[in-house]
Amino acid sequence: MADTTDEIIRAIIAGHARIDASSLSGESALTDLGIDSLDTIEIVFAIEERFGIDLPFNANAPGSTSLATVADVTDLVQAKLDAG
Image (cartoon, rainbow, N blue to C red; front, side, top):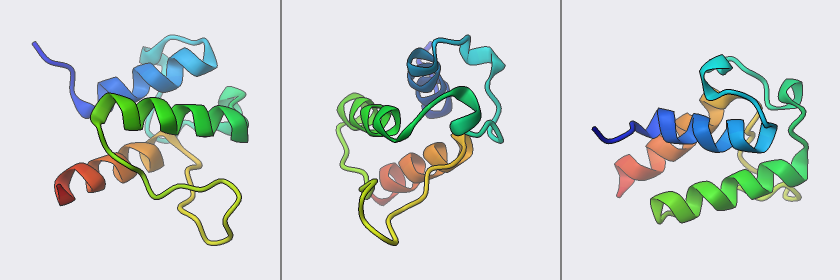
């Protein structure tokens, strides 16, 4: 059975945070997981590679998409996938 988008994203985030993916919820804040801006960029790259998409995220750009929680990441990826 194929993993869902949410499961894949949680696995990527959990890998960077070095925790079990099952401990993550949508409300889990990336900063609370010890994920800094460099980790966030690496997570975005891993997600882009896994799904073959480009995400509108630039950590240094004012007004860029905010990725504060696991749900923020999942919502951004799902919106990009839905848009085709």
